[in-house]
Amino acid sequence: MAKILIVDDAEFLRVRISKMLTADGYEVIEAENGAKAVSTYQASHPDLVLMDVTMPEMDGLTALKHIRAFDPKARVVMLTALGQESVVLEAIKSGARDFVVKPFERERVLGAISKLLV
Ligand SMILES: [Mg+2]
Image: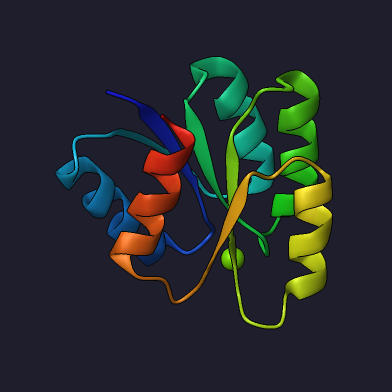
């Protein structure tokens, strides 16, 4: 089954998404900031990344760019908040494949993932 890297500085959100994805059969790994996301991506080669935007150490946009530079085929879905439209635009330009606005629904997250993993 596909391996998904969940990146968010909010632990409760990582736990929530992790439960959601493991219940659907995905293998899950986690990172709490952008810097750890980049190193975890390089070490574990996940099939897809769910990436928060606002995080300490390194933000999600910067991490997205590093990951896409390392692996131009990396599938990254941004987890954004309302009001982050300019971030979404830059993320798409930088290679993000989709975005999900928080607070998100289970179906939206699972739908974005399954669409990209076909
Ligand atoms: Mg955050």
